[in-house]
Length: 127
Length: 372
Image (cartoon, one colour):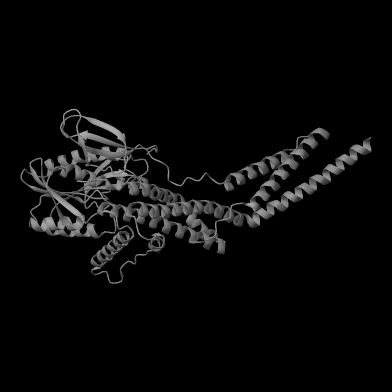
């Protein structure tokens, strides 16, 4: 299983982004200069500057690596222990070896048999 | 003074021209190479996902090896054997002549299950039956992650080689779904390692609740049945043998009971987890008719055949959950859904059968973490 790691530095796209930013800055400077020297508002240069800035930002967002979630998050899993005779019920954290309907000793309230009634995780996701 | 201003204006006009020329060239470049740029951007996106898939695959492989070492205490290093098993392939039976395809498919599935369990048994000599079943489940989840990674890598490399927008587009469109499923399998590794009940076991949980405290017997491979009284009717409750990771053979079990009772069964009720649609709530319960069993179709076919032969009505109760929930540790909503399913079973029995009738109730799904 010794295949190569995918390349991580997007040099080409970083160059394009830098080029776009330079063009945006140049268009903006030209617009400012025209306004100061001739007193006219150069809409074309302002639009060009804004669109180059937008394009550079868009490309940067596209190539930006998302934070790596590997699906190995620790989930909070609970075990519910219940008495078969009375209403005794205890919730604790899941322990290795727990399974549903496993005997869990005797009830501290009535001496009846305790069983693991259910095991579940608290879910954060919305349906 | 005026000459200096004139010169400045002339300079600005020529700079403007040069600047506009650069813009026009840039525009032509994007016009000609736009799709290529988009293709490379898409490849970058796939590359990121591929990197995540590779991490999941490697972590899965590592989990299998460490769990086998921890539980099975093997004499030799299981790594080469695990690597070999991760490349395991199943070849489907030929479908050109469909006669008897179900029987042939069942045989291949049985051989596969037997082979995987035997391999795990040899790698983990100290593991008991429950642990062998759980380890087999861990191995299957790692196998699925490895397969997904390799398929995505195939399309990525194909796209990179050909720079064909349409090859890349195919995988890019499916990538969100593939990632969701892979993350579910990555979470499943933990559940299988610890032997926690998973969402797929919703049907098995319902059956376990109904048969708890009654006599049980083995009716088919890894499948148990228990006789109980529900609402004054004799009920045969079927589930896979737990608490190890098993799905059993519910189809075979139903067939056996119907043969034993010579078809004198008033109703078959099957309970299974079903994939919910977006917008539906996890744990929602739905009712219907038909055979509620997923998978390759062998058990479904058997139940349909035998129920049709004896003209036994089939009821289905489905507990809704997302694709991620199916192989992840069971959610609270699904446990609540299982409790609701029990009330529905009782209502269906009261409404559709008479006292003294015989009913079969089958809880379908992986029974990991659920005893009986």
